[in-house]
Length: 163
Length: 277
Image 1 (cartoon, helix red, strand yellow):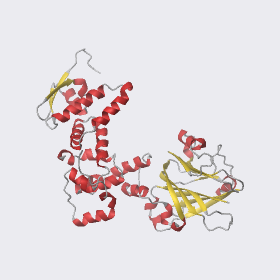
Image 2 (tube, each protein chain N blue to C red):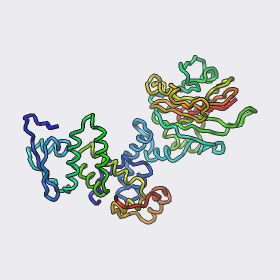
Image 3 (cartoon, rainbow over the protein chains, first blue to last red):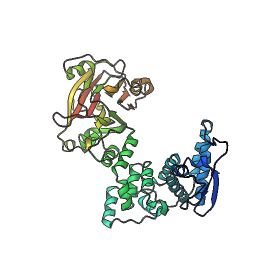
Image 4 (cartoon, rainbow over the protein chains, first blue to last red):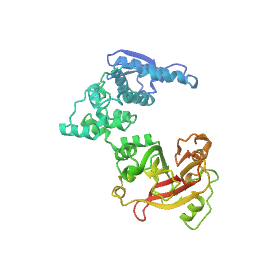
């Protein structure tokens, strides 16, 4: 889906957090609202993204390529790709989700959020605290009140592994 | 892990995919999460999503409370006449766009209404009437199976099927909670011959001609096959209907009830009760 009208494809370099460089067609990054605005406002040829790990960026670029190739005839294949795309350890999924949110890739953001929700929905309060390293800042009284009012929230899966 | 912990927008987005129980779980993890998850907009989203209804605009109560009364297993026989209750099933939610409802125990087209002087007369002769001054917005429909009210019919086999619909705010309303609002008999209708099924429907009159409403009246698509005695229900954006196939019988006695929010208030609940003669 090269969108170049001059016949020459514009090239852009993305620089990941660990200074690894990724060279790709500019048309691909236009799927990101953030990068689209950057490219349009000033004619940049290299964009540093220090907050995004290279590993995460590789995954996102993989998605952008697949999405750009999406046609009505390979819809099924794309759906399977999406499923596999989020089938990673939770830590990696969260990195991707945060990056996608930052880059504003809307369709993918929704899909990632759904995947995160699916991973935590049946967990217990304790498990979610451990997974996200959340310290409870409720008083013991508040805590026991929650337990009394909504015991079901504490009954969920205690499994706090992040696979 | 730490990168996502305090991303407010992101959690609001993730919350769109969580049900009430998971939202409560998340809100109990810390004060920060509690503040994010207790936003009314989060619960409004969850409520409309899980009830599959459009936004009714304003609501008089917090959406978390509306969500709770819609999904915590409460139904109208839990408050009163509990001893009569046998079983129930949630049909779903629909909306009243206009303030007029068509109540009927006959789902066979055409739905004909012979004009009579009073609603009572109309029900008596047609088993069908238009009720005005309905509270618009989201309505929740349940199918109830209850013990038949004390009656002097020796033939009564003891159970009654009730199509029970209520405005989503009913259970939170003070007048309902303190018992000052109650069901009033609008009228009744007898069918004194064998009937194949006990059916009932509630329709928003403004949307009678909608495609989705037509699907409710296309009985073949949803009622049980002969000898399937399970109750069946069908819900559409502006209509709800039920049908239970009946064994050999001598007819049906149907009562229509409405509940008003105070003396000249809007109608906030309706019931179509059917028992064998």
